[in-house]
Image 1 (tube, rainbow, N blue to C red):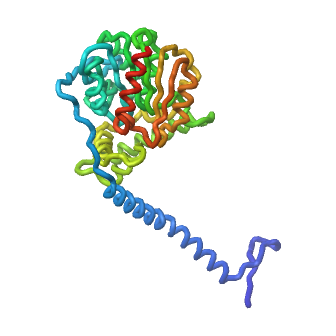
Image 2: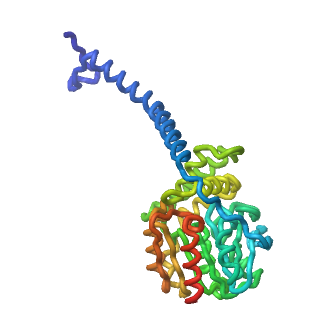
Image 3: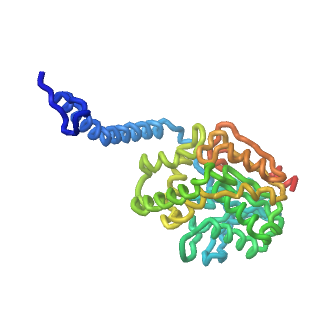
Length: 344
């Protein structure tokens, strides 16, 4: 059998021509297989999503906005125009939703609490019917707009309720504004975090990079129209816990679709880089922390850290629930808020 010596020098190993050709062929096959495997993986994922979507119980749709709800608009601190839903009379309860959602997600809580409270749900800046001001929208601007709502409406002894990004905005408003601390009497934090989202000195830089990529991806993809596709449905399904209502998943997808891409430019980075944990002990007010055990976005460890860092907080974990507690566990949310208001 013939052999040849590589020209790399006397110490180079001898290579059989057949073996070298086979190795080159295997490498080319592997390189060609990567996109093929990715394509097959995408097809499998799409098929699994379609099957899961078809098998999911349609369930109850999200509650509609209650009859008699007033729509209000106020000016924000960042040049924004802010929209609120308002119903009922009594001690004010102000709800702040998460990113890519809207005030309407609190419709069930408005209906349940309006008999005893003045209930307000804010479309956070750049969401729902609220319009952002000039420049890139950042989380500190959202928090400043929350303070502007408290002051403009003259709200006192407020039960402030923040979900996900809304919880981060609530914490920022209270930690950065003495006016907010004077006006808020109790704090409820649902499926949120005091930070950091992940530990490590490099995480803030990683978060900024992820935010830039997410914003670019949103701009490139544009805003789809027509029925919710399997890809949109899959992304909307991820925050939910066990056995969600298909109608609620569809509504979450529609709310995400309606969020302007410009809203996400700075917010995604700020959410991922958010870290106020070291200052939580500055907040002396009564607080409640609620989390689902199947929350993939802000897992229970974040809620436990919040409850441990706050001076007067009570923690409750809801088995099987995911991130959207106001839809998944409305009775538990209502009960928690009534207990919090009673002790504050």
